[in-house]
Every structure is written in structure tokens, then in C-alpha cells.
Length: 228
Image (cartoon, rainbow, N blue to C red; front, side, top):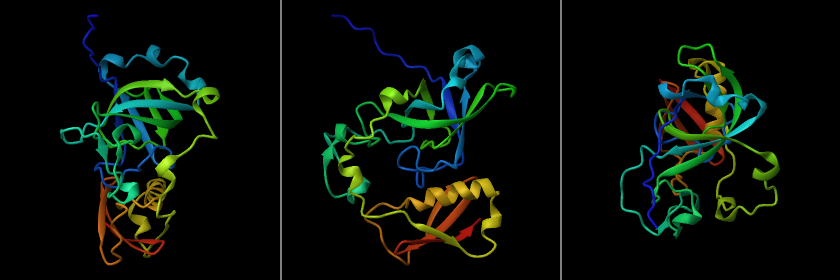
């Protein structure tokens, strides 16, 4: 049987405060205070493409791991959640190193702006995509079929770290608008470090909201030491 060659169109791009891979939430929905914009490519800036989407509360985004290096694909990967030492099958993981570098994310619709020059723009929360990530498709989330409360979480539940308490010195919080700082704290509370790194003296730095955020972790306390 002759098969037609697959060709994918980039329909939109994500815009948000995550400008580097380090620090991005490892799954969607973990940092719900962080707002992202779905900005459509020029060919899809027609309100007809999203007619009726306002009747849904959540969306599925199908996107490309555009910043993952083009490495050879192996049958197994080493998830950071397992300390980077244990191998599991690539199809039993959400690793970006896949035969086809495609990701999926569930996000919540905040608002839709049809008046902007580059509109319509969909504002969503809980995205785990880096700024500039190409989006291949957008689908409505259907709670009656897409939600499975009884589902097993496999190794993803075997985390060695719980949520961190985020603290900072006086005055540091004022270096970001309050809404962005709330999103930053939510992001950091899920511990962006690889599971195998636990040096209490090490200062980590991540890009967020046009700033460089430096922090240290001791026990279950993450301290923001500077925002520049």
C-alpha cells in the first residue's frame, strides 16, 4: 500500500516567561499561575479556526520538542525522575528524545483576545512549553473521556522529592510583577533540579520572565538568592 508522506504545518507558537529549558515544569498543569499566549501563525489568524472553543475550559496542545538535539534514538531512556540512572522504554516515558519529537500538554483557557493585531490569541495557564515552541495542533479537552482518576502513574509517582517551600530575602520579590512572581514560586516549588543533584551549597540559575533567577536548596526549603 502506498502511503502519503506526512507533512505537518506549524499552526501557532507559544509565548511565555520560560526562555530556557532548565526550569520549565516537567508536566503541564504544575504551575497554573504561569500564563502563556498561543499566537497563531499568519495563515491561521482567522477567528473561524477557533469558533466555539470558548465553550471549553481546557485544551490539548500537540507540539514539537524544537530545542532537543538531533541525537540518535535509543530504545531506552533515563528519566530524571528516577535519578538519571534507571533505564525504561522510550514509549514508557515522556522523554523528548523520541522517534518523532512530539509533545502533548493539557492547558486551561484563561481568555481569548480577538482584538490584538496578531489575534485571535488564546491565553492559557499550566503550559510546560518553552517560549517559541511550535504548536502543530490544538484540540478541546473532553472531561468525560480524557479524565481517568483511577489511572496508574507508574514510575512518575516514585519521586524522591516533595513540593518545596520557596522563600526569598526581603526586596527580591519586588523585582518581578506580583503575578509573575507567583508563577515563579509555583514553578520552583516543584524543584527544577535533576533528581541526582542535591548539593546544598550549589547556586542554580534559571531564566524566567526576562530575568535570571538564582536559588539554593537545603532540605525542603528553596531560597531565591537573587533576581537580576
